[in-house]
Length: 78
Length: 382
Image (tube, rainbow over all chains, first blue to last red; front, top):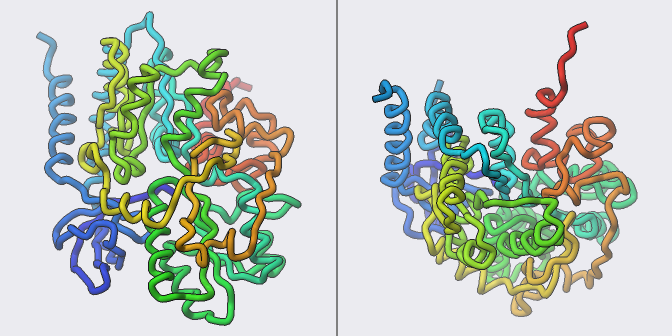
């Protein structure tokens, strides 16, 4: 029910709609709740609507934190 | 194999192991860490990826009531079925509600087999299309869910009003997350009896995209509970558990945000404005498992009464108790675990659910049935 997935906006359509690309699958969704969404942005899609934008810089920051943690554990103990 | 950007990276097994090592290193053996994951999405992720097995014994996850299908009371499903069977309406619903047990051995699915015109939709916009295509029929959208599904419902109500669509209405059963968390914190089991020890919350993922992190600040402060908002992927949940352990160790009780890639403090303001335009607070609403909870749900504002199924069909609400042996209520409050229920995996299975927690894949019982139940059973050599 709360399933929502990040998808890339591929094209803006009339009537607050957009085509999104989800791992190669294309789908038309409503962007009425995220009027600021532009082509190339990642949006979080839920029941056919973009409910928010994904901040890709923040995503990379979280992933970098994970990578750092992983690297610190692989390094031999001082 | 194709990759899913911003999904696969948050499921990396190597990093999960590194996080588990870090959790074991930082959890102090003489302390207790019992954290409630509010959302069914987290319950599902924990079970699917076997996260609890990676945690030390003193770090335990308590399932919360954040599964929208699970907290939908029988009386509301009865209303939806009644609209189809007694009023001849086309009732449009999310697929998740189809198998929820209702009164008289019925469910939406069984009512459909009896001739009720019940149609599964992916989006409320599909229900609007069905109303336009069937001008001689009443079409009702059965609107359930937390803050994530509410704005899409608001959009269709506003659109119906704009088109002055005469045959469309919404049975509004939208509920609010912060009220449910308060209710749990105020429940006797948590507050007085101490049967549900809670040391922190994994805060909602997608709900928080809409409402932001600010609404949880009151719980952290007033109830001295750490809250960490987390995404629904396994690494998100593990990182949140680590952040909660650190808060407990340092005696802090703050709202922290692990899901910064999608959640900020204020949430989606455009969606909040729309929701406030279409809906208002109900004084009280029944939740399955929690009972009547004050100010915990929304109703359609009088300005949109024409599209409110409760007004249009003059519906009265009749509460219906759960099956006597069903422990969904206690499971939803975190008092019992799925395997404690007599019906679990015997008469109640995902194929033939007796209680709502077995229906949705986000329900604690369905998640435990699908992914976790074998590890509780000791294997004895023949």
